[in-house]
Figure 1 (cartoon, rainbow, N blue to C red):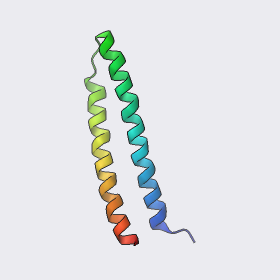
Figure 2: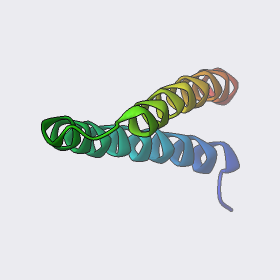
Figure 3: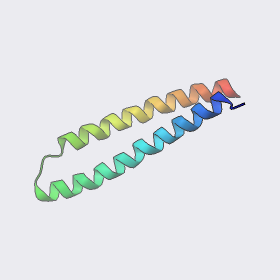
Length: 69
């Protein structure tokens, strides 16, 4: 039988890593785009959105972790 809490915890951790990876990629694009004088507002907004998601995932993770142990 699969422990659902462990599965959820692993899923939350994976989601956090995916958001972090996306933030890193967007920051690279921002540097390139700024060098070319292009608009980077959309990328900055996406970074803020990813940071908010990370915060939500971390909150869920804390709740799950407390319930698991």
